Length: 165
Image (cartoon, rainbow, N blue to C red):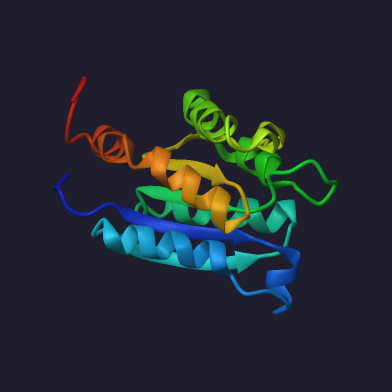
């Protein structure tokens, strides 16, 4: 494995967005964050809140070998249409609950409703998958948390580093 920028994929899960009724502002925020960090946005798409479509996209990206980090946005709430965590759970090889806990814990003091997020995180193959909320504010909060360790996680998954930074 060679060092290089993290290769990021952005999956926006939104019924309204997939119908063209809403702009993908959360996906745009992730793309800006990735660009600011000199990551390579290798893939980006928007799908409806449908488990099968989410699973197909996650598997294709993670198993393709060209993505180090998949960030999903949307579909992590309590409604019956919020199925991103279930789709993510179905594809993970190993869970990383500390990441999802950190995302919720960091936002909670300012926004108690953050406790309602059911987002997950974990690994499929050599790809880290993290569910972020659907709101641009929630995405921004989550990306601020990820900034503290995502490079290290990427290095570990790419076998570029072992142990602690």
